[in-house]
Length: 125
Image 1 (cartoon, helix red, strand yellow):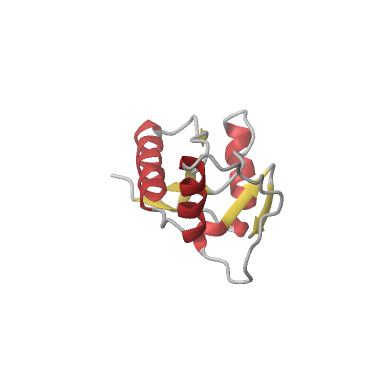
Image 2 (cartoon, one colour; image 1 turned 45 degrees about the vertical axis):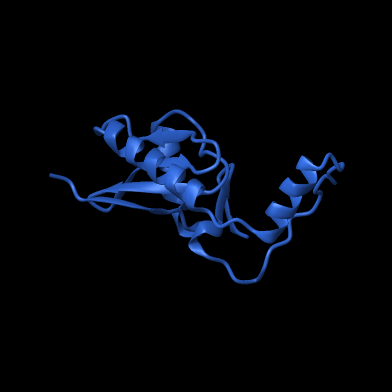
């Protein structure tokens, strides 16, 4: 039986993700990623935001991809709601026009959930 690990992607996973995408004949999904490892080797990855997955076609990864999708749903469901989000929803309910956000503000403290891989480039928000 294989040892499975599900974890967030880190910037140093970029090369392994590019190799996995090449095996899968696709691109590395954009956005925050969850990685599924089998016996310490990256075997699948899934975008937390879009649900797009890549997987090693030479290993039995269908169950691993399903586990990644379930974990992504848990993370999305359990995401803390911010005061800003509640205020925005309240304004929507009251019919007040919503401003369109044009800038993403980030702090200097990164957590594992802030890891973003986009088009083969890894960066931390």
